[in-house]
Image (cartoon, rainbow, N blue to C red):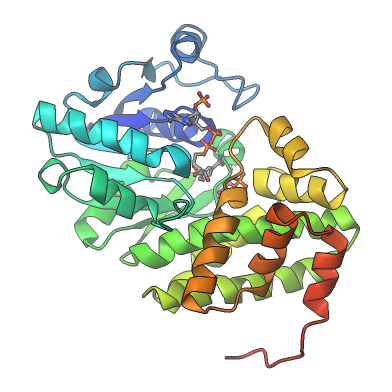
Length: 338
Ligand SMILES: NC(=O)C1=CN([C@@H]2O[C@H](COP(=O)(O)OP(=O)(O)OC[C@H]3O[C@@H](n4cnc5c(N)ncnc54)[C@H](OP(=O)(O)O)[C@@H]3O)[C@@H](O)[C@H]2O)C=CC1
Ligand SMILES: O=C(CO)COP(=O)(O)O
């Protein structure tokens, strides 16, 4: 059955997920707040600022009018950076209330809100009335937009407390190159998604400093331990962290030159300033913001996250990268298994 889907956010990931759904035969409208980008998408089927050398499906329509995208949609997919979730979610909530609609809400955003430390699904719960949504589903996992664009084989997770919601998303997105698993652990899925970006920055720093595979493997493994620690403190299922939205996403982000977080860390390791790195990226580097949120949250909850703390010192306290990484090796020795 063809579903009417609205995709809100036309950056790298939103535009490629919208394209995938259009290719799957869904009736998709992609909303962007940028009228010029919409014109180019509709007339030339390209989105060069975000995905280079790629032609989008002619089935995909774009608009800068959120109401026309959302009107009649049974599914709304939100793919904007964490810092824009409240604004876009709030606009959506008002529209759905005005239109009297109750769609399935899906999001693919990876981060935690500054100061409140809320997960994207918590923000959406607050911004969209219960009467105007069925379930909220999180779509997450190892999935670089560039790889999905070229139809590399990709597997991800659809997480929802209600199995039916996760299953709807599974059916909607799955095809012969994009395989969706279900999970009922929304908390673990969102913590894994947000926190892996911190470790990816660390892995980039390690590379930029000239360290090799041993250091990378150790950072990823111990990084996963502290991601799990914080997630479990908030009620996550520990097994989620050995799944696609946990270690899967950590591997793809902490080992790939396609990762914006890894590239940011790599440049920091090579001696560039954070400002220089952020000015040049042109796309969201979620890990920079998540590091601050996770560091503060870990302090508040008394959860040990030494790698996050070291990255925080580099990003926010102007610590020397080399000293911060060596500091991790000089801590008191301890047991691996908790
Ligand atoms: N890229 C990827 O491979 C993947 C990304 N993600 C996650 O998806 C989320 C989005 O990332 P991604 O698409 O890569 O980011 P990009 O930086 O590529 O694009 C962000 C998009 O959001 C738009 N946007 C930003 N603020 C607002 C706002 N207030 N209102 C409306 N639109 C806004 C931007 O518009 P403008 O052009 O005007 O700035 C842009 O179109 C992130 O949380 C990321 O971690 C998840 C999996 C894979
Ligand atoms: O989340 C991602 C892949 O799963 C994208 O990571 P980056 O934002 O680091 O590019």
